[in-house]
Image (cartoon, rainbow, N blue to C red):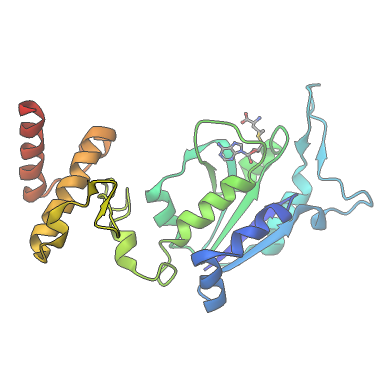
Length: 245
Ligand code: SAM
């Protein structure tokens, strides 16, 4: 799978590929991440990418021509999706990340200043993506978030695919708590069930903890989830325990 990121600050994205699972995935050839300088798609001697907004407001807007040219030069004929990072877009979440992982090529356009000329939105991009209800200075951090989250769903990127399956949101629940050595730290003990060696019991405890956290912090996730009979049973148990305490 390939990501193409279009930005006026390519240097901001370079460190993304120098560490961790992304670096390994690129080395293994599972992922390709290319960062394109928008200025390389200008035709004037000043390599101008922005201009003043019509109608007379403060600030600058990214011009349409270099963005159209960049996307048209980069876009592959099949299984490609072109996304604009914008606070006005659909909210990025785990479901969208998994969907984007199904494409062969994801093109990410990073806005700057007051944003991009609206004709890019109307006539070039397939999707507009927001990483949350706040405004960043540019789309580069948002693009990095999208690359990281989408990559986790690309087979082979995360060494143990099982860890993606129980990540928060993937299965519609928050993740269960994890512990490592030492067994006791400052008198705080790791739950004894994790040393029981009983895998069924451990799996049930983890499911209960995931449900407990989700109910406390993100009950909306439970409303949109089809619960299994074991989950229904555990939720009843949790609610009863809450009432009794
Ligand atoms: N005037 C624009 C608005 O209110 O919709 C905001 C422009 S913002 C200062 C500059 C660029 O940062 C945007 O074009 C977009 O690419 C990026 N950006 C800012 N916030 C974002 C968010 N929450 N999600 C994704 N991209 C964002």
